[in-house]
Image (tube, rainbow, N blue to C red; front, side, top):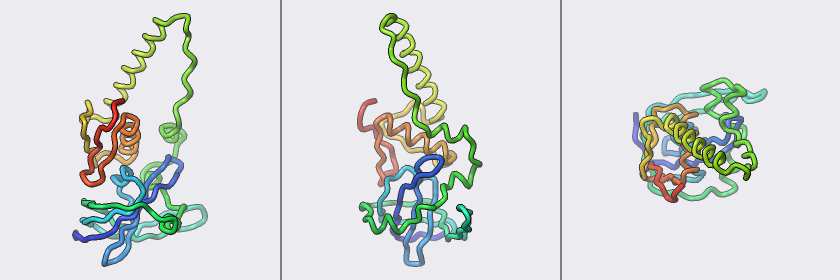
Length: 200
């Protein structure tokens, strides 16, 4: 395990499970691919900081008719202190054929893809029975609260500042991130906290 300063360049790509982040860590000892699940919380950009590297080892995957080998760094922790937007040249330097790490962790099924699909359009309200509509709305709100409790587990009920549990699986973390954004939270890359900005 080593601690080293470096630059983490993150890009967001689209995969069959939805958008995902992949990154390159540039240091004095080399450049490495980073696909830690915590990075899915971050916006695309270049981040300067200190990185604690747990291990460095080759990794491989198949994409189409190609066999890709990459040198991957696995981070124990990191502290970021500043960031910049990516230039078009820096974005173009990333392969758009990078594999979503979620594909390495679970097989693709039709049920999995539904979790990242857009919600179906809501049916038109029936003005003839406003009481029934109000009851249905209240029931839907209760169901949503129950879904959130299941999604966030011990983090529920949510406070004004939240740090996601890094031990949860990658898919759950992505779903938590998407839900926090819906609820008006923004991610602070320095503190690694989600802070409530607007009321839902």
